[in-house]
Length: 211
Image 1 (cartoon, helix red, strand yellow):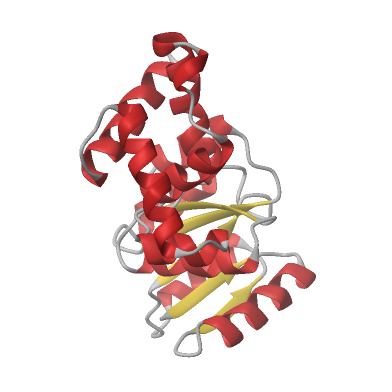
Image 2 (tube, one colour):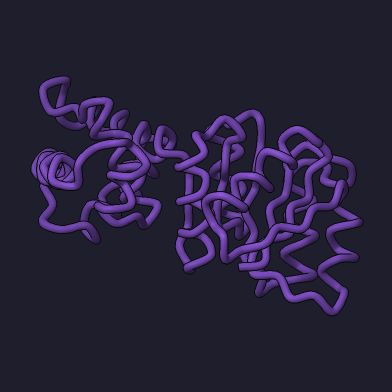
């Protein structure tokens, strides 16, 4: 996988390069420091599989930079990275076509897994954001007795992101069988039978919680 990182924070850039080198040895990462430089790199002869855009860097102007980039390079998977993650920014970024929203505070293993999910065609959003909306809706609809536990909320967020049980187990540092047990509990509490229904329930309840 050939990744283009547009970020003007040298420490984060170097840390991500090291992460890719260690965790994704078949991938390579090229970095630039502004949105204009990213567009120039994308317009060159190099083919990139993923673009990572820092939400707060020269040329971005918030999510307007994402819109510009999506308009010019519509087929390219784009992930937004940010030091600050708020639900409204996450929602708007995904609505504008971002395939992921990655907090810079993510653990290395989770960030590596998220990049691979996006590159494989999936969408990644922070687990806390994905599950919190469902939990808010559950409070309104079912009362405190049926709330997901903090661990279940975390795992549901990874389910929404498209991770397998094995990938989730690696990210949250649990045995795969333990993750399976958590998934069964999530299904029961949401009243669903499989992963697809769980993801649909998360999206449906999450939308209701934000209205």
